[in-house]
Image 1 (spheres, rainbow, N blue to C red):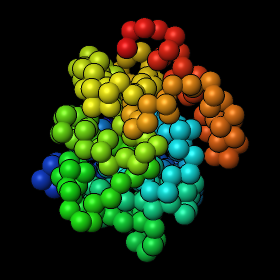
Image 2 (cartoon, helix red, strand yellow):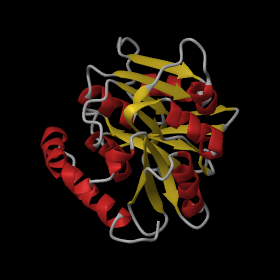
Image 3 (tube, rainbow, N blue to C red):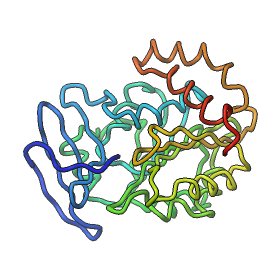
Image 4 (spheres, helix red, strand yellow):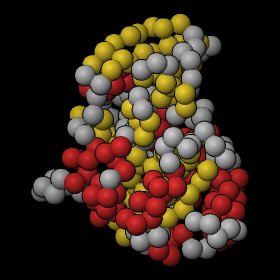
Length: 266
């Protein structure tokens, strides 16, 4: 997600308790916006499963560490770019989606090709924090937990609190991977956010900065500390995934190595 002016023709405009939601279309692409032109995600109409933003590709680098997750939890629906990719890439995986805004769910089904009849897909209209911390009989664990929840001010603050992060870790399976999309900017204090995530995962984390400033930053957390120790050992996996999904996983693996193990400034 990045700040942007609305591009293209506005085809839908709605409001809810959290603010304005806009759908705009241009050159066979649809984008979901929050507030004053804050772009959430973009899809291509004829191939909605393509990942058009580099931060989405970076988040899906989680597949390097969990190639075929049987169960995935996505907190934050947005414009369905990640959902459509996951449904295409992992057709046999169980995918749970949690979205706090019913209007976003409705718009996703109307404009962003969110299917209503996929047996492997479940959609929950709920707050991410309440969902992940619920310990009822129907709570479950996951091989992958993805957090991509933003509001008009940036990353949803409640999803950076200690209790939420710790609950995410507790809901991971033994070799599970947690991934969260954040902003790397002075305003949002990425170092402080990263410190909180490291504390929740007992330093079993990796950061992936897409630029030095004012861009997305992706953080991975691991239940098994051995999962993230030997990054060069994933080179073959990254190359195989690149061929399978047409995404440059070797590049992101290199970024992970240089940003986490070549410098001692974590």
